[in-house]
Image (tube, rainbow, N blue to C red; front, side, top):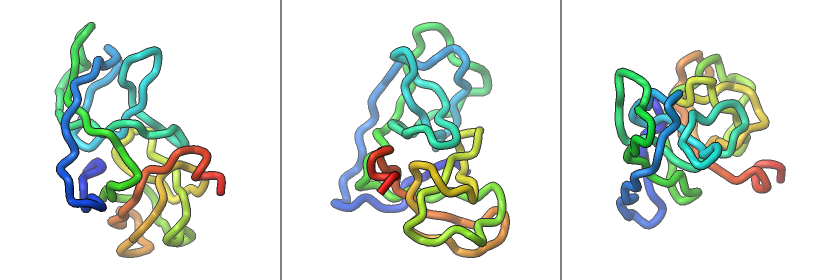
Length: 138
């Protein structure tokens, strides 16, 4: 499913930016990304999410290739699914990202603040905001 925009606080349409991707990246629409050595890579676990991919590729990006992304600001609520049953996760908890950068896990201690979950079952629909590491430790 990936991280898809559910709502934006002020209703604006986040603009696309075109940034250079790592040659290890095979982007999916809705993939959580961060920068490493100036290039986009998949965000995992408790990584700070800076961008969300707006494109799909069937193969890794080429050297120097730029892909469309949006910034993952705190003013945007994203909808995704949980890899694992989030029974112990409550609204307000900050959870970790799955290693594929497309889902969240039911593990507390990440940068995805839960604002909604529809069930406690594996694959639950969850809505999150991405927060900075400083905000995640509050």
